[in-house]
Image (cartoon, rainbow, N blue to C red; front, side):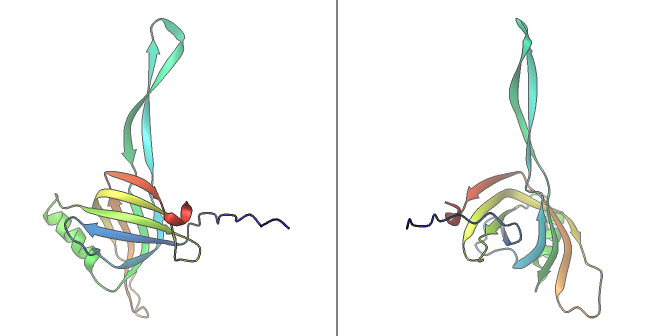
Length: 158
């Protein structure tokens, strides 16, 4: 009987972690878990050039790349570090941080992929609706603008 082929698990979008680091600081800016993450997106503008001697041909040239805003929703944390980061960024517009969105394996232990976002700045903080029955500090929505991002496959994806 032949050995069964080991089939890889598909990438699953529900198991992820977010890490935010201020420049020059070793420890993460905040320990926080979010229910949703959106905005890992880059778009390249393509320019079309018509060649004078070849009217039936167009040359496509790569243009600038633009990035979406990262939107994190329904975050739970035990501190006010995200609010402090936003306030500090208002007081010093040069302040930046780096963020990483880590896509975890289905069992939660292995890393499938990592999105590294460079030179991040918070652009929107939204508090949740207040509820007397809740007991955790929450962030309804955090939006982060970033200047670039890089995709890095994890060891579990190889």
